[in-house]
Length: 281
Ligand SMILES: Cc1cc2nc3c(=O)[nH]c(=O)nc-3n(C[C@H](O)[C@H](O)[C@H](O)COP(=O)(O)OP(=O)(O)OC[C@H]3O[C@@H](n4cnc5c(N)ncnc54)[C@H](O)[C@@H]3O)c2cc1C
Image (cartoon, rainbow, N blue to C red; front, top):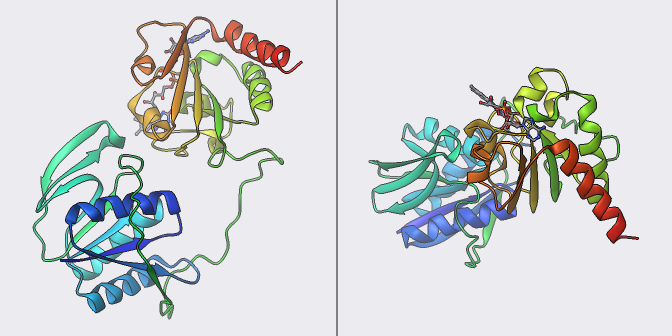
């Protein structure tokens, strides 16, 4: 069996795609597309590369770009596509639905399987796959001509931060975020928030973590006054460790947390900042 892995430039997620491709047990080939991002043209280049190696499966990373390109591949080939797959056994697969809160057992009937790997559900594969770099024909294709990064005011961005201090309704107000900002500054962290917070206008939408916000994968995610709704967890489940601070011992967030502090965040967050300052002299 010949399997083509699509590398989208995200090394970590692409290595997870190789893990999924490994499960198919065939000979692995790689393809990387050069030039400005143009989903349909990139997909055509991936299809061409798959035809060249006679690939019976195309596996991509479960990134926004990986899912978008594979969706275009599926449309161009008129084949089914299974996104966010965690395991594949022949024609049978397990994949994540509802932001990773539901695992679905499914069957894929196609002469060429199109799959993406669920982000952070698989360990990165140690298998080294050489990716052939191809340049797509961009004639008439929709393409990205500019990329405007959000103004973070010189601070670390939410998507890149190693530590995220995030606040929910429990923070109480826009001004209440001052103590989270203070802790974030001490930890070189970014400040995030839940949708309740952005809906209330306490923080801009760019700060929202979740299904309809930014998906983060820091080393540490500190959730302050956040209940742990599935739509929020969908955005932070990639965190290596989660510390939850919540007044309600029954809060759902504790079921996702590695560390939990039960209590009023207005006392706990400043106490952590004070400890950090003291420990650093
Ligand atoms: C289609 C759809 C998409 C959505 N997308 C997103 C998304 O991208 N991101 C997102 O976050 N939500 C999203 N939501 C909303 C989501 O369902 C929840 O409503 C939201 O995440 C709840 O926010 P919260 O945890 O801040 O508020 P709440 O659920 O109200 O929780 C507040 C928590 O704060 C605690 N608390 C209160 N006071 C204190 C205190 N003094 N100290 C400590 N703890 C305290 C409470 O015990 C409670 O657990 C979406 C919903 C839908 C339907």
